[in-house]
Each structure stands twice: as C-alpha cells, then as structure tokens.
Image 1 (cartoon, helix red, strand yellow):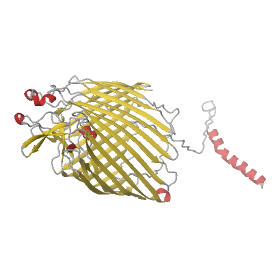
Image 2 (cartoon, one colour):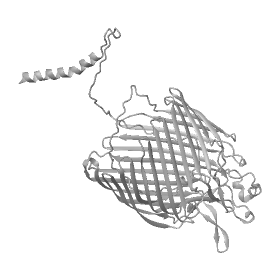
Image 3 (cartoon, one colour):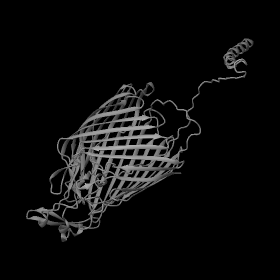
Image 4 (cartoon, one colour):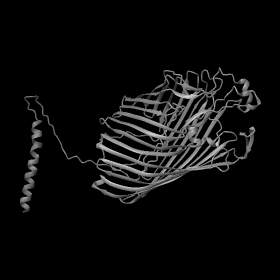
Length: 619
C-alpha cells in the first residue's frame, strides 16, 4: 500500500512539473531568431494574507487653522443614549504597500507670522508632542497661541487686539480589562471691545463721573481649566456587562467687576448588557441605562459686595448686596436605553428624564425653581441598500445650561453678567428624518430635516445705560445674553464629501434655519465649500475654503432693529503647504481674499484681507 502511495506522489509531482517545463520551453528562442538564449520563469504560490498586530495610534489633542472667526448662534442639543456595545464591521481588503513604510513623525512645531491690509500684526505658535505607538499607554500634548494686534478701519478709536491660548495634555492606560484616559485642558481668551464707530460722539458722555470706570477701552478675558477622567470596561465576552464612567470638572474665571468665577462638576456613566446575539451579530439586543449629573456654582464679586439699582415703589433705589453670593444650578439626566439590530434594521431607543433648576435663595434677581422634562429618544435606521443607502428617522430633545464658558465662546464682548443671564436652553421635543449613503466608493452624502420646539434660545443685545442726563446715549460696546422664550425652529441640512485616494478631497455642507419669530444674530442660511489637492507625491498641497452666510437681524444701541450683512457674507480663503525638505514644511494662508467688510456683531466689523506664512518642523 505504501508503494502505491509513493508511486502516486511521483506521478502527481511529474504532472505538476509539466507546466513549468512548458513555460521554460516557451521562453527559449532559436538561434535562427535572435541567435541567443532567453528564459522566462513564472513562479506562482497561493496568497497567504497576514494581518499583524494593530497598534492604537496616539491621540492628537487638537488642531485648528489660523483663521479666527466668531461663532454664530446655532443649536444641536441631544440626549441620545450612549452605546457601549462595539459593533463589528467587515474588515476592508488589505492594501499591500511597498517597503519601507514611510516614517510618521510624532512631534512638530509650527511658527507663523500674519499681516493684513490694516497693518495688523499676528503671531502664531504651535507645539505637538506624542510618544508614538504603544500597546499599554499613550501620552500626547498640544500647545497653541495666536494673537492679533492692531486696529480696524473706521473703528480705530480703539484697538481690536485679541489673543487665544490653549494647552491640552492627554494620557491613557490600556489593559485587557479596562481603558482609563485623563485629559487636562486650559484655555485663555482675551478681547478688546472695539465696536464704537469713529463717527459716534461719546467723549462728552465718557468724561462724566458716572462713566469714569468705562473711559478706558474695555477688555474682556476668560480662563477655563478643565480635567476629565474616563473609565471604560473592555469586556472580554459578548454577554458580559459593559460600562463606562466619567468625571468632568471645569473652573471658569473672568475679569468682570471684582472678578467672577464659575465651577462646573459633571459626573456620569453608562451600563449595558447584550442579552441576545445570533447569526454572528446580525441579530442582537442590548439593554442598558445612562446617568448624568451637572452642578454649576457661579460666584460673583468674591470677597466683596456692591450696590445695584432696583426699581422700587418710590422710583429707582440703590440696594446693597453682600459678596460671595452663590447661584447653584443643577441638571440631572437619566434613563434606560435599548439597542437592537436585525439584518437591515438598527434601533436605538431611550426614555430620558431631565430634572433641572436653580437653588438661588442667596442670589438677587433669580427665582428659585425646579423643572422637569421627559424626552422619548428613538433613532431608527433602515439600511435599504447595505453600505450604499440608509434611511433614518427619530425623535430627540435635551437641556443645556448656558454657562459663562459657553456664552463667552459664542460672544466674548460681554458686559458683566448678572445671575439672570445664566439660564437653561431647552429642546423640548424634536423629530427628524434623513438619508445617508454613498453614490460611489469616492462620494458619500447626508441630507436631513428636523423640527424643534425650543425654549430660551440664546441671542444677544446691547447693555444700555439710560440714566437721567444720559438718556440720549443708550450704551457702550458690550452685550448681554437675550433669551427667545418659546420658539419653533425648522432646520434642513446636508453635506457631500468626495475623496480620490489621498490626492483630491472636497466637501460641501449647508444649513437652513427657519424661526417662527426673530432670533438676533442667527443667519437663516450658512454653507461651507472646501477643496484640497495633493500633488508632487504629496509634497505640495493646495486648499481653499468658501464660507457663505445670509444676513441677520440685530438691535442697535437705541433698541432699533437693524440688518447686518444684508447682501450676505462671502469669506473666501486660499492656502498652500510645501514640504521642501524631509522634516520641514512651509505654509501660506490667504484669508478673506475678496476683502469683504462684514460684521460679526453689531458695530464689530471683521478683519478684511489678511495672510499668514510660516514653517512646520517635524521631529
């Protein structure tokens, strides 16, 4: 029997050698043809793909360009359940790369200098640091400072200086059973309130004793220190209980009269368990719950008191309030959630409960209150054509506290706030429907429409001084928050992305908002068009961005309604980066190249044409 097996092996080996011999004989040319001997050998072998260990890339804490724009008012308040299950998708086909793989630098320094048509000087400095790939821990840091010094035409009575500094340090530990991350962040924003036109006569008013404190140009600075610790369970089995928890602490300070500070503590967590999983994850059911607690304490006039004007039975009266007044605001959010998938269907649902209010027993002008809100959260996705077309629809809602940090990030040109200015914005209920998918492997899209029943959406108005002889002068150049009350908002938005390998990137997004009543500083339509082209073996990158916005309504110093940017805003920017040596890249950014004059806020004109040039060094 062994002899027969040996003969069979020899016969098979001989049959396998025939094609090889044929390949060799086909490659032999006679002396009559070229009088030379040529041989072609084709060696074949079965493909054996091998996926090596995947290291988690280091986290880059932050990145932003050199264009500074003041934020426009917009809202997206969500209380959707956080899913701690990890959906598994098919691994994409491996792309075989040539050796050696290009080295990725972990660290970089960027230095830039800017200038504009108003002879405004603008320095930029950035530092990125990372330890690279590691299976057990990660560490990264980011530092950035950007300043602008100068004046703006027709508003050069005051300087339009501003500066922004931020630092972000991130660390993490990764084990088989859990992941722990810590983020430490700091930022400082400083602006000068320059929004007084040269034609406005305010010298006589500012020379009076009542306004001596405001004779110098107002300057506003804000500081935020934040620390976040996150813990995530790395469950090893499909039916294990999965959970995560986090603690987020914020300290905000500013230079409002006698200094003010705000403390915010947020704690929360999520837990879930997959109770059904069949057919390799195509049919799965998970149940869980989430919890979030937020507490805000605003301390105004630390260690000091002050006189405030109140309207009494006999007219305007001065009332003294002691310092160290506490204004506690709280928000508790909790609810059970469900996640279900079945072939082409995916469902996320939750019953979210919100309890929020103010404990204002020691604070003037604030009514002590507690409110309750319930939001059924449903997100249903139908994968009509897998990986190509998905229809989604659902309901949502939520509550957000308008903290000092948030309000100043939208509009930093603020008058010293009172407690009543720090309220809640509520998305009582919203419903949405949309389509997302891919036209081809290079193009993806999303379109969505939603209806929101809102309460106290944030906008802004001037703070007006209106005392006696100054009745004809209605304000300086600083703002206070203004809340809308109940308001209905209809929103439509969409985006389109195009990618061609790493050579061409293009993006378009647009948003339209309809409000049933006037909301100041809220343009109805906004859009962005961006394009990037990499060439010369990715050594040269060209990019452009066009920001489009319609006009918006505002209130002037006398309380009259005015239009800003009636013809719309078209802010077009161009840029280029060129890697001229292995570790050094030069960049050039041209901002607002058409030099349009438009307003961020009433009497706050934006910079016109400006440019910044610099280098980036990798190490």
